[in-house]
Picture 1 (cartoon, rainbow, N blue to C red):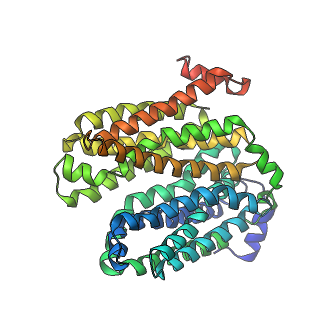
Picture 2: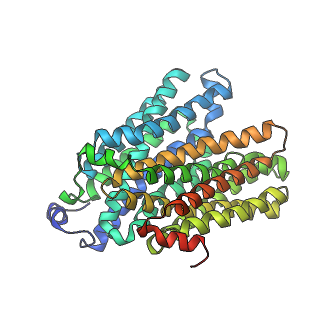
Picture 3: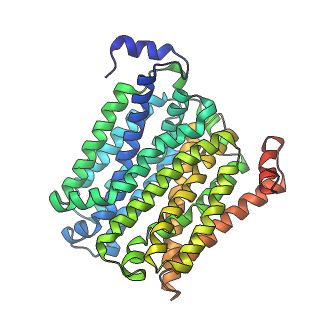
Length: 416
């Protein structure tokens, strides 16, 4: 932990001027927080059957707890960010992580599905604003010129949680039970809270802004267009991820023991794409988005055509995570540049859009299967959604490209 003198010095320095060790610890604290949040989200999927049995409800009813978490993210992103607009971003991060810990403690004590769903809703409230405020703090640390890298560093904890979330949930489920699983996640959140308190910079540069300034960002049509692009194009990740288990056991006819391997490959792909995407977002206005989603379509086509073969399925799962995640940091950076006066709100709304993508992708995949089109039809549902997202982006750029966005039109036209 940093001493008082060192912390005092940090409060007066400009972005990028603190020691590399202090910067590294602050970024580690931010990533640890996102890891705790991601573990909570993915662990819920791993213990779904356990709490369904314990609460004497069927699995479809139990999924309401997972839906409630996603709803909490979508609601909390704008509401909490606007309500806390004037708070210093450091104080906001601490408050959000405390709310997250409380939500998981309440989850561990739930007596029925109603109280569990309410507790999961509370847990989800913190997620959107955490990533928004975290991106602002990370950008302050590494410098505005590396905003893409800053966002990818914060999100890295979430992608790592996706890699280890399923094995961790399985371990906790087997040895602790579902209530203690949520207690363990609350403990992880408390550890992240302590790290954030100790290592995030105390700086007036991280002060909040008037609510009116934040709200002005929502009046820009291009902000909503970019969010629509995210909600549609990223849906393919969830149209695939939601059904990885059936892909492995029913399409490729592999043993259930291979499901965690497939989930890990997908998560490793996302982690790699997050790193690549952060670098592209800092160098180019839209190239990361166009290249990421364009390559994702190619990988989705391969998966949709040959996913019943294990030697196509496994690399393709890695590829979907890699290519789609490559585009996401560019979306974040573009949102922030479209509304530079409201970076926290833009980060929160980006996370809300990704949770909308989660709902759309899972719903579209389920609808495709329910229509009798076969298990791998969910991949083609994701393909169609990504095409729709790219179409929205294409028409928004070519309809009235502002001067600052002229590079995007050039990229799309093949000029770069």
